[in-house]
Image 1 (cartoon, one colour):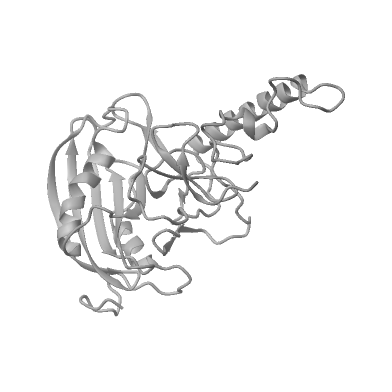
Image 2 (cartoon, rainbow, N blue to C red):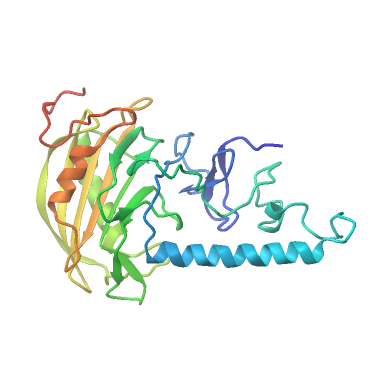
Length: 307
């Protein structure tokens, strides 16, 4: 029986729900019973593997080898499953309560069925937008993100905690809690964006020692995907390291009912940081899915027109 697409408890982390696309688990998650609109999660394009992706892929291969070995050992010579053995490789990945009802598909691994010749772009199907993938960036194959995200392939050891941090990250999501104008929403969202990038993570660890102060570098109307929105950019000072830069860009989605979308940018300061002008370049490149033009910062679409 094929399980229909939808939000189901994550087999690897029952405290969140993960999107099942009808074929495989994706990288899109939300809090249990969240108000995230129903629909497909962000589609990804062929990534260029970074160090973290390679390590995660190696771990996945090792886990698959163990699962296959266990299956062969448990299977009797007559071809019938042994007592207590899983009915399929997917059943070995999670308990029945963790899998979508009626599902026999593998769990805990995002879909990677992407054509090898697909264009290098970042696509958020949920919000109906896409943008070219900059050189030196990738859409991670593994990892849990609360939104569609692309990151720099290169990373560095975080100032605190011994883990690795991205030089740059751009993510997009539906702003379900947004109220008011794009300007009001962007000014509200920027503080959360700064905390997400340079504050404490979901485990309570602060890789940069927390945000200590900020300076407003820019705030203005901007056009993305043919829709008029607003952006706010901060320079952030952190307790450890050299801090960085964050930007929140809020605009109506070109898809569906035009729910507000926020695209968050986070660049870590120091050697290896992307040029700050890349934030404007990415903003200009945002377009509706299937459209060859976007209409962003510096476009011919005047602020105040929704396109």
